[in-house]
Amino acid sequence: MTETRILVLIPARMAATRLPGKPLLDIGGLPMIVHVLRRAEAAQIGRVAVATDTPEIAAAVSAHGFEAVMTRSDHPSGSDRIFEALFTTKSSGMGMGLLICRSIIEAHGGRLWASPGTPYGSIFHLVLPIDETRSG
Image (cartoon, rainbow, N blue to C red; front, side, top):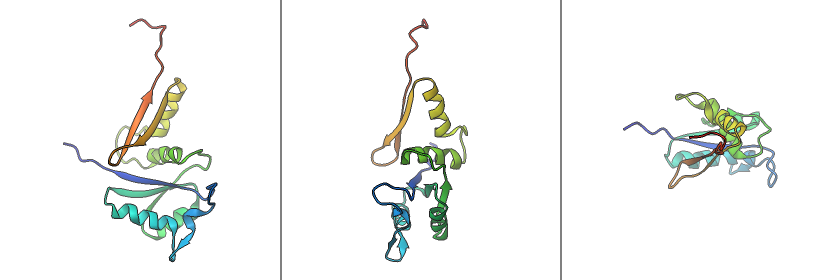
């Protein structure tokens, strides 16, 4: 049986629409993102990191001993940020990453997305259109 390596990857950005600046808001003397990271680490699920487009968030995360992965700032969602970060932090495997896989799938009219797994983890879904012009 192969060893399961789990990464808890938390997307964080300063430009949140409901509460701008939320990741660095002070809660009991610590940035909110550090509290989130500590809770994730306490769950002992796996390696914990933050995916962010903000150097100040990355600095706060690193200053408290956690890992931060810088991403582009134009992602429309946290899932997109995670896709990019997984591409940049993956230590082994095919090396293509989810971001590139999704780009290829979408170029062929398909979709790739993730949903929560139970009790933890992710389920990746892939849908590609059928080419009805080809005979099988």
